[in-house]
Amino acid sequence: MNNIRHAVFWPPFLLLIGASILSFTNKESFISMTTNANNWVIANLGWLFSLGGLLMVGGCIFAYFSPLGNVRIGGEHAKPMLKFSNWFAITLTTTIATLTFWSIVEPIYHLSTPPESLGLDPNSPGAALFSLSTLYLHWTFTPYAIYCVPAVVFAFVYYNMKKPYSLSSTLSPLFGNKINKSTSTIIDAICLYTLALGMAASMGTSILTLSGGIEHITGIGSSPVLWGIVAAVVTVTFLISAATGLMKGIRILSDINMKAFYVILAFVFLVGPIPFILNSSTEAFGVYLTEFFKKSLFTGAAAGDPWPQWWTTFYWASWFAWALILSLFLGRIAYGYKVKTVILVNFVLPAVFGMIWMSVFGGTAISMDMVDGVLSNALATSGPEAVIYEFFSNLPWAAVIIPFFLFVFFITFVTACDSNVAAMSGISSTGITPEKPEAGLLVKVLWGIAVSLISWSMISFASIDGVKMLNNLGGVPALFLGLVVFGSLVKICLNPQKYDKTIGEKPVENSKETTETLPKAL
Image 1 (spheres, rainbow, N blue to C red):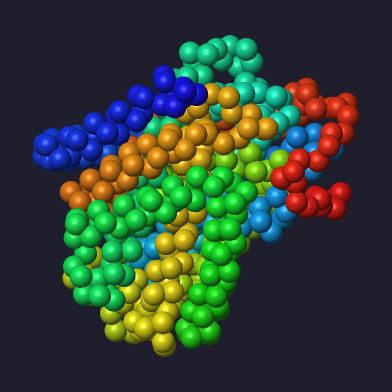
Image 2 (cartoon, one colour):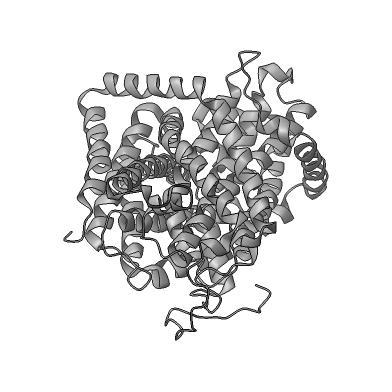
């Protein structure tokens, strides 16, 4: 704690603890305050979230083909600290925590209750096509663009511009020396708060999923008591991993996680309705491409339809809330690679993986529900956490695959929490440099406990709606800062040599963390 940045750490930390205390002592006021704030957000800022997501996609494409694309993070002589396979595994598994939940639950929501303004009949072929194509919108290129833009900017300003380990550094291409210490502190504190809310929301989804699995296997009811126990176990596990540092805990977890992803993905595809998966995903992909702009900018305002605010705005708020702080982590591990490769690993490849995953899981869920409505019934009678286990119960070898899925989900979320706590703790601390990238353990412990408390409070008193409210509230300040970071990216892309202080540097000895060099093309 000696190296803590008090003005950055304490305001968001105390706000989270205060919210948790209020939820215990005055539940009605807590729910009223968060609900009113959330209603204002979705009514007034949905359009800006839609435009922001679209801009990020354009930013990734522009950066890839700009002069910045051929710049190596850390300078021309920099060697990667991670080999390519480890890098992609860490990047994917730290940004995909709730995909395993929503890939099964979300398509059932869209299939059974499509947007009223589109005139689609529930459980119709049109609703099925809308459902799968909407999964592609929510889980492929746009969300990963929201992650990728600040990650590229931070990697460049931190390693190539030699700026401090702070989110305010990402604004320096636009504002230069106008960003002083006070401004930097305010920006970092706001972003820390947004990630804490976003991470709490994601943890809420994960707690519900794990508790639903425990109930399915053991019969123990999914209740606030069980949620509290699950939250405690998850927290202890990711703090143990966080204590070991990037090169040990998270690298091992992410490698296990990727292998488990491949196994369960292959299993569901092979035992699922293969012709339906292949045909429906092809058709849905066509709809996604032809209606990309329409779907991206759908607000429902003309028809008074709240669907876009409760789905697309919810997702974009979630990704923006996570993106800025997580960019410190994603940018840090991009050292030694060209910007083109950073975009490939943070934007293109995860989006392709997400599309394959959604095609298999979403397609199977839709096919299953259109036969007898079994998943819709589970959603209506037992809640979203029950849908996943009803899904697996209707597949072969359910007694084996359900515990395995729980393991996959647990490891996925622990990996994501590990990277987020590392980023949150780093920005809360002084003395973080490329040579000394890890924050103290006590700061990590405090953040882990605070996030777990607010997460448990929201799902206990507001269930899945509480998760959505956390995402929306955390995403608002992150959205505005993200748009400014987008401006920094554009400015760097136009003339990267102007900002790159590594030009002309002599080669240095390889870091001990360097595990692999890549062909010059990368």
